Length: 107
Image (tube, helix red, strand yellow):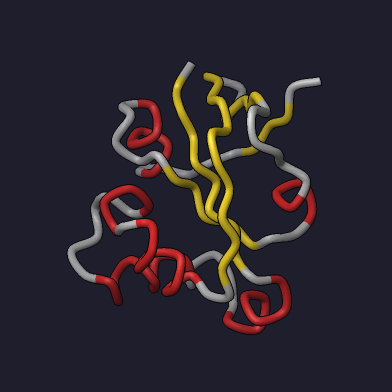
């Protein structure tokens, strides 16, 4: 069974163009169940292969280790990239679940 998740713009377009290669999410639910080599359908539109997974305590730690340009390509600073995630998640959620960096490759 193919797994799936949705991504909002502009990040969806960055993934489709191969610019954004890492999707950061809270390490819970279906994201905690994703495994290397899984095929994931994004927005019922296109598929990616999961080529790696790394877990972190915070979004800041993830972005610092994975690279701003791979995670939030349009961000001009670390703070801007981190704040992009806080539009979707709270610091309390981040503290409770931790963060997962999902490394993707278009297929």
